[in-house]
Length: 123
Image (cartoon, rainbow, N blue to C red; front, side, top):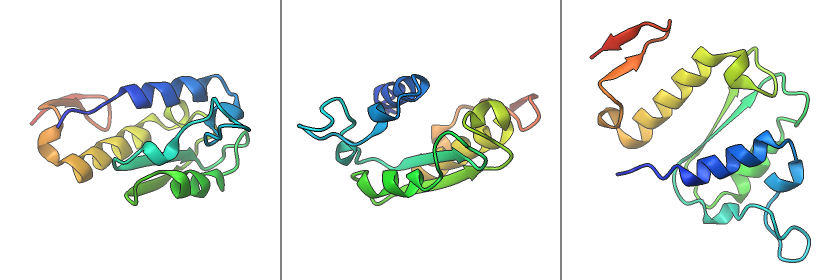
């Protein structure tokens, strides 16, 4: 199974703009540029910094509710603000790897990967 990363890129680009309206659900009249979350039908990981003071953590439940799949994992990144990959990169990396392993199996991961402490390890 190939990962379709285009949707992730679109959401990342929108999130990087820091325009909350671009992340709100699509509505033909009120938000025609919004995201059609109901079309997301694959397993989904929502990560949120526990100390994010730009967007409330309650948004995670809103996103999980409008996404078109019942397999939604919400993970709060400890000791992280609005940019959790910068604030706590090891935890973010472990969360993504564990999510991929859970959804696609361990064979979906590459043989060589960066270990928990930044050391290149071979399996």
